[in-house]
Length: 225
Image 1 (tube, one colour):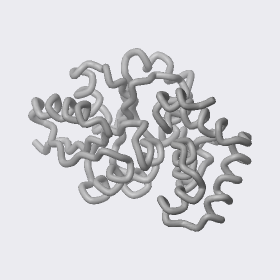
Image 2 (image 1 turned 180 degrees about the horizontal axis):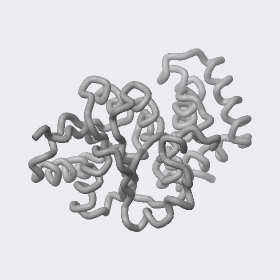
Image 3 (image 1 turned 90 degrees about the vertical axis):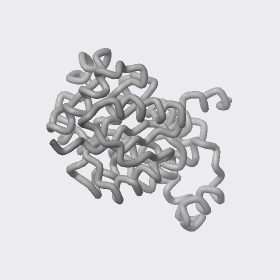
């Protein structure tokens, strides 16, 4: 029997190793790669073509939401299961609108994680038990149709999502330009578009939005005045 190939995308090494050891106990799984940030996850997925990606929602360089969009654009047959320590409605909604077909809390049991991988490989969806009862209310449409809905996150382009993350991480426009390899005026234009689309008109507001959407870790909130 062909094993289900899995890519692990998680920036915390101890968590990633925990998932690897857990999944290696199952005879029908094969861990084909690991990534510690969103950009690595996209590159590894394009190289390895995994059946399933376990994708952390908040990662450095590129968050899991945008990484999911980029992976699925390149590999429509790959299934993404989003991972998070948080179960906020906004996190779950943004994950499914980005194309994820499941959402797992990091404290989910090993049994449910393994079951989730098998379910999504078969074309089904899977959500941690504490979340599943809320999914129909959050996304009454299927995940495939939900990703095209006109939500604020779904309306942002890939580049705007990257710029938003870097702004929320405290990067100045010049640093953002250097990180993304684009011009300073281009960054400023993306920043303007973000503020227009999100109807937010200051950096602190953009940062708060990024936290509420799960784009960056909520711990960053401690630095906001």
